[in-house]
Image (tube, rainbow, N blue to C red):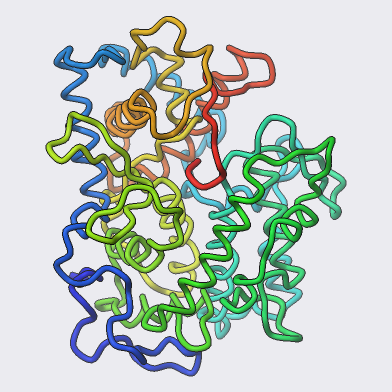
Length: 440
């Protein structure tokens, strides 16, 4: 079993490596051992706190939503049908940022990652570990840039002349920026993400790379650039995880050093990211000096705090493939939860698994800290677990064969987009959330 990061490194700490992933400053992560915030920086906290909110709503104690679990079978049937249409052999990949890097024309995929590796001479068996570092270098900034783009933005892929929107457009735009060396501080080595370069990224850099113009606005431009700058600052201040000089890909060496018999637990990866990258997120709610990130207030919990950690869990899902490609087996995927955002949550909302008591709810624009949005997100986390169990039953698959990461991809996220397209012209979510580019 991997030791949790808040307890400090195991005896000997992370091993020194030629790539800089060395514990030069002791346990340098920003959450001290035994800090009360540590209990909220886990997937278990997300699941149990969201369950408490669901119980509150199911008991009729909420003035915001009613809960209708009898509609789970209808949602599951719709999701199972979506999975069979998209993956007739049921060989569903993980839900991760890597799917967006594959975006092509209708029904097509473009393996941009494979092309990039071939061009860089990194396709061989001996290149597995460096390929993993590069994959991590790519995917961390890309996930942080993945908040909703807004309805008016699109990205024209120079390689294919395709016009891509939403997450696919954001994914390809960030991929292209990375491939051009946009995150590298090393001359002649474009395929890196170095803290020194990330610390200097500004909104104009993102605007140019993402083709932002008056007629092509991108929601949360300043927020995205601010996240990348803080990412660079935090990585540079955390040599225990990111090495010296700080490079995001050194996270691979850190996780490898903490693996047991070549295995690393998904919950350990998530908590490592939550602890190491916690200061990246804008200051919202803090507990004894530690920012809790994507954590919000709701009266159903004893201390009033409900964590979601949506983008960090999305990042954890997105690290599975580079880690496994390098030979690390990631176990315990059930420790991660569903992602409470507008596609998964929109699916459950559209199927009236949760119904707002206010008939004008969907017509208004909401903020992420409103109790009604916190409640909807919590119900989404619980609802996704219930839907996943029912989907597996419909498909005749076990949780081991078809973990939540595959249900989401197959899956609830695609089904959310599908039902949105049927319900509303252009397929927008069922209601609007005012986002600063750092939550969804």
